[in-house]
Every structure is written in structure tokens, then in C-alpha cells.
Length: 442
Image (cartoon, rainbow, N blue to C red; front, side):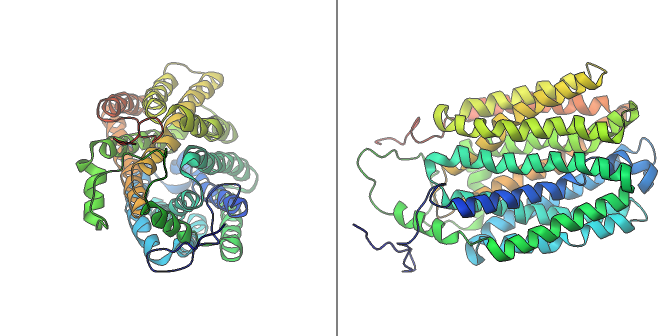
């Protein structure tokens, strides 16, 4: 028996269903999209920082100037995450994704033509727009079309695809720079990546906003007997942007705990982006080997999410998130405790595994306790705080390196920050999985 399902505007939604299997074609298309989004940021991760002095005129020891492009990226991406979530609830997910790729078009050409570091900073601003719009939409779209009991798996697969893309791009561009030259290699790789993404978005990606409207319509119905009721954040029926921002940032302590953890964990990614290649290059490591060492972090991070996201669907979000913060911080501290390629690779792997525990599951925790009617906005604001961590972290590690004159201080700054943030998450947070910690009366 079928019943006619409608959203709050009266549109017929009876042909839609939630689930990975039920929407496998679109799920796969969105995985390809986030892989390409990872390629876009990954092409900036190995060659550009390592050759900042030789190729783009950054004076040796200018740690604050070196950090400037990641600060710009973090601020812009954070703001665009905020905008993307709210905008996608008005115009749809596909349009926002397409706009993200259009902003990426000038990036490889700007790197190729760059006469100085200012051009790299400007290109990274556009990269922040691209990432804020495009990566946000790949995540939101997958959550739209899958079931609540698949959120951990969904986000694990999303981040697996994205960060394997980041790692692969770092390795590929390292070799491309050695074979073709740094500018030429990045130009070719960038054109191919962005061109493929635009074509695939336009032809094969569907808008998933109708699935979110279907979930919102179902959410308004009485709960089925025996169903677990999430501990949703208390809000008005249709909260405005400011109310959602306040809930995510301080009014709901659980959401605030997740938001601050998201912000601080990006200190690690800023470090791996800015200082890790520079640290390795000054130790005499070649560009291809830098790509592989940094790639270990991305490969372990991405690959482990194939099971860490699914794991949280069974054991909950709380302990994977807290332990992930501490394990990741330990991996960063390990980097400066040894001095071989094997040791640095092992340290990068430990940090990557900690990141895999926390990364999809912080987002899953947000999705658990935010109603479908404003979940897109909530995820956008969480991602605003999280990716603002690029800017805050890059500034902090730049200051630490500047005043000590060594890159090692930046590693200790990030490691200590991760331990403290994990402690705050343990103190303020709680289990959000509706099966393991349902609302009162469920």
C-alpha cells in the first residue's frame, strides 16, 4: 500500500525513498564529486608550501607570511560553509555545488602565472569559496538521501572519498612537479580536475533538497511505536539564522562542544598543510617523498573512515570523538620526537587515524540532534566553526613558529590544543545517537 506524501508546500514526494541502496546512483555521483573536491585542495598541499621560497618569493623563516594563505582559506571557507547551508535550503543543493566549481576555474591559471605570494593567497581565497560551497553540498546531499541509522557510514564514506582525494592529489602533484615543473604540473592537474567536476555536476548530479523536505514532512507525523526519538536541540519551529547560530555556538552545550572540537581539529590540517611540508623539506626530504609522507596522513584518515563512521552507528559518537582528538594530538607530538622517513610516516598515520575517529562522527553528532527542517543550516554553521579553525590554527602555529624561530613549536602548539579541546568535548558533550541515548519518554 502506498500513501501520498507531501512536503509543507504540498509537493508530492511519494516517489522518493531514503537509503544508500535506494539512491545508490546519486550516492556514487556525490562520492565522485567529493573526490574531485579533495583533488582541488590537495593540489595546493605539497608543492606550494614546500617551494614557497624558491618559486614564489617567500623569505626563509617568514612563518607568518607562509601561513597567510591558509588563514585566508580558513576564514573564507568558514564563511562560505555558513552561507552554503542556508542558501541550499532556498535554491537547492545542486546549484550551490555548481557555483562552487565555477569559482574554482581561475585557480590553476593564477598559480601558473603567479609573480609573487600574493597571487597564491588570492588563489587560495577562491579555493576557500570552492571548498565552502562544494564540499558542504556533497555532505549535505548524502545526508538528505540516506537514513538516520546510516549517518555514520554516510559521513565516513564522504570523508573517505574526499581525503583520499586530498592525499592522491598531494602525491600526483609531487611527481607532476618533478616531471613537468611545479607551475606546469599544477596547471594541468587543476584544469583536468575542475573540468571533470563541472561536466559531472551539470549532467549527472540531481538536487537532493526534495529528500530533505520529505524527511521534514515525516518528522511532523507522530512517532511510530518503538521508534527512538533523538534528543533534538530545543528551538522554535522555524528558527532564523541567528537562532541556529546561537544554538550551534553556545546555547546548546552539546552542539557548542562539537563546534569547538571541530574548530580545534582543523589546527592539525593547517599544520599538515603549512608546516609539515616545510619541516620535511628543511630535513632534506624530496618532493615526491614529502607527498608520500603527508599522503600517509590523508590515506589513513580517508581509509579508516570506511569503518570509523560505521563504527559510530553501533557504539555511538561520544567516545570515537573524544579519543580521536587525543590520538590525533599524540600523532602530531610524535612528529618532532624522531628523525626518519619511517618515523614521520608512522606519526602521520597515528594522526590520520585519530582524525578518522573524530572527523565523520563530529558531523554525525550534529546531524543526530538537529531537526531536518534546519539541519542544512546547522551543518553549515558547524562547518563554519570547523573550517575557521584553518585560519585560527594557521595564525596560532605561525605565531608559535615566528617567536621561537622553529617549526617544531608549531607542532607542540597543535598537540596541546588537541588534548585540551578533547577534554572540553568530554566535559560538555554527551552521546547523541538516538538509539543509545534517546529523548525522555522514547
